[in-house]
Length: 283
Length: 283
DNA sequence: TTGAAAGCGCTAACAG
DNA sequence: CTGTTAGCGCTTTCAA
Image 1: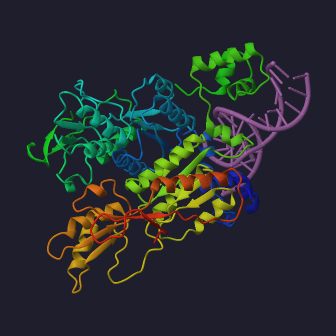
Image 2 (image 1 turned 180 degrees about the vertical axis):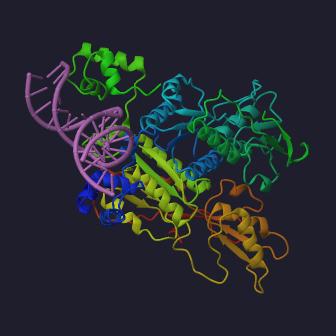
Image 3 (image 1 turned 180 degrees about the horizontal axis):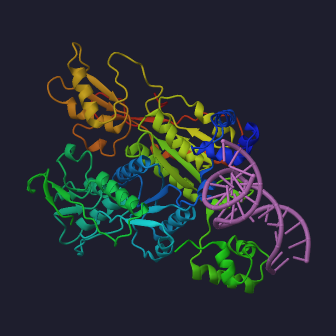
């Protein structure tokens, strides 16, 4: 049983495909009687239009599809961001393709290539560490792109104590354990996302207790014992802002590239922190 | 600057579009010299094929796109599930459209309609409470569907104390507060997902302390004070299983509808619970 | 080894 | 008001 096409509906209603097209796209200028017959045939056959074919032909460009490419969809930070992007997209009648890069430039390229091959109108991208020259071509061809800076950017004051590229709670704990073996072990840890924070919390206790400051905002942060001090980002605002920027581009905004900085809150919950709710620039 | 098409590449390489098609799809039987000229033109113009057009014509059916429809992408449970589905899809060269229903039948229908209009090959769906007759047509037309039961299903032994349809932490807390005003207030609460668990935890303390058992598995559950007893589902296994089932259908499996039940773990962390790690059927 | 013709499902542009 | 023709970007089929 194949999907019925416009031609099938046309035959069933005794009209031309063009008339069916007019009826299903709600164009004026079809005789009420004809329209009724078409609509009945549509219902009887369960016809649904093929948007891919439609967008292929339609002069008005665009596929009403955007792509969202993040490090890891399972990370609550990006999950909230994704939900926020999706809400804005849904409001405008767009659908969202999602992909995780795992912070691997190769997977990032694969995902983006698959998206642009499907003619997405725009891309919201949390870039990996790799280069992004491959974006130039789709952008020249009309794909709008909004990059979302990683939570940790602007922040890095590299020292011998910094560790990057940890991918899991287990790895984070191992890294902390190693740091604590050093002759001058750290007395505090600053972590840049929730997953890493969890791993560090696992290993922070015991003799020579390590204080922890996290960067995202664990929904449970306040319930931890002791409470966790965090620099809080708002993924919902981030996603909403990115989507709004992207859609303004898709809608025709051709102004110069813009850089938008969202404020961050320092939420001191443990001892010795700054007053709660102090706003400040990220980093 | 428009997206270059096969015709543009053909002109640039001095061949017919058909030859370009053969080269880019890696068909044998093109003279090495010709292929080289085509490949150079492809690079020079930054040509990338249009998968929508390709899938429209190609005899081999399918768009290598699946849809994932959940209650709320921001819910960690579904976020993990989504990541798991996406991983399996990526492994097979598929991309994933995502949508949240908010448990609203109307939004569910809109999202699914948008997905099927784009000719998704399959759908993984966490159904809302509404009816699903509208699925019959796309299914007859070849769209494969895998439904994932809501975490709470099979469970409901409705009593005057049960509350359903809570959408947020705040609502959950309000509901608990109201329950505690009853002449016979509950002494324990069972919650069906992490967001609701949080809200209930907010209001569980104070005089007449309410014990809490959650259904999902908060990543931080073990660090709470006191530790939270949970019935733990594994969203990664759930997503992986759903994806595997879906792809077996897409790959041609036409056996009778199947129902797969995943085991659940009861993780007793507070006082008075069962031993940790006891396996049992969900519900 | 290459190309021409036809057509996927749909709509723009023009008839009538 | 309705239909015809052409063609979006691509691939199938067949011929050269």
